[in-house]
Length: 328
Image 1 (cartoon, rainbow, N blue to C red):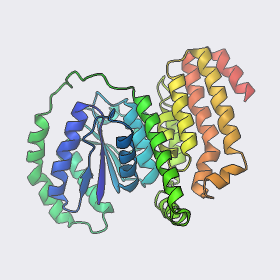
Image 2: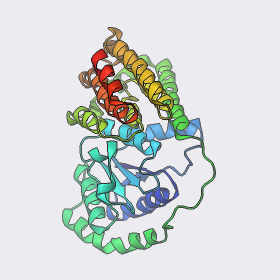
Image 3: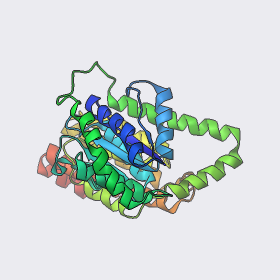
Image 4: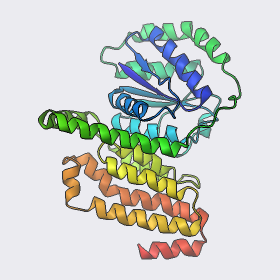
């Protein structure tokens, strides 16, 4: 059983590596996957991590005070939620309280890095395993082995050391999307018939659970003054609509440092483009006649409206928001 452990930043990476060493001691069937590469390592790494996201059975997102607003964490959480049912993605909070979690990450059932929280993580993994371990054994092993994990975690610096300059996260996100699209194109050139079969199998595996669309809409109305929901949606859509995922990522880059007037202009352009694309007759063909994919595509304009009405409300005078609402 493959467990994808997401990290961003030095302390988060230390936590991820500690879990990689510790989890198989409790659940021997677990195969943790943690990238040893820095997020600026390049396209080949981006393609590899996309493949690991696809094949993971469970996801752990290592959250620290330094990365709680990380663009990369938001993207991976969106990608993980797209391919996993409720309860298969857990944000693990290191040096944070549950009340500190907000935005897209708040849709997940988070746990703290403490014995009780780690116990819940192990139980959640074991619950979805094909051949789970005895619950009695799990309940005995976690308290027994917890001191070993605790000792490792105690050696992680309380404050992240200064890091070398890294490429902006939005460039990495764009690179990842491009890499995924390149992989798909090359595979189609090999054997179209085989690829169609594999695509259908993957779609059955990564169906959107019914509550996801509603959760995204709710979360989008509570985000801060940055359009972070675009990154989350980009991760969710990257498999079924890679071209739309890239548009959302590019829009985030354009909007995040814009003033009120630029935000309004960029949003109207994005909304018009999304409305045109999602209602075009060719959309159903591009989505492979997936009911779940079409449902999300139909809901996307509404989700964007909720996110940006809140964003504009905080960045423009009230009268501008009212004018925009009347024009919709």
